[in-house]
Image 1 (tube, rainbow, N blue to C red):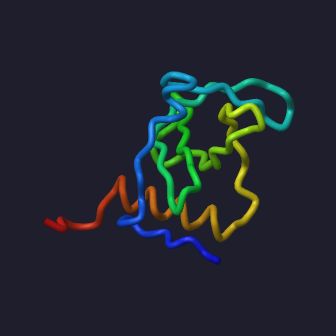
Image 2 (image 1 turned 180 degrees about the vertical axis):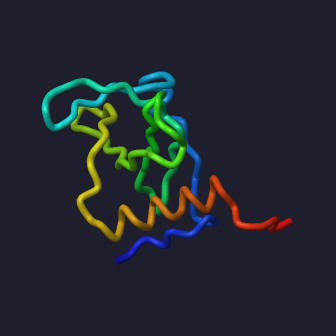
Length: 104
């Protein structure tokens, strides 16, 4: 079943910020630690997602990751392997961040 990635279905969350503070450290492919600011986190159909931005990058460049609970109940960030899911979350975030026109 595909999640309905629409703005109406978003639930804003704070779980990552409560667990880690304003930023997280991620290890890249080469084993280097990079610091990312938590720009946003939300759930769609119960699946959590995080938008992470490196402090020295522009807003257009961000990482989209899944928020996953591990066996201990702690939170982990996981790469989204499904391109369609990644696209959906990314577009959703763009829609939320850069609304086209005024919808009021």
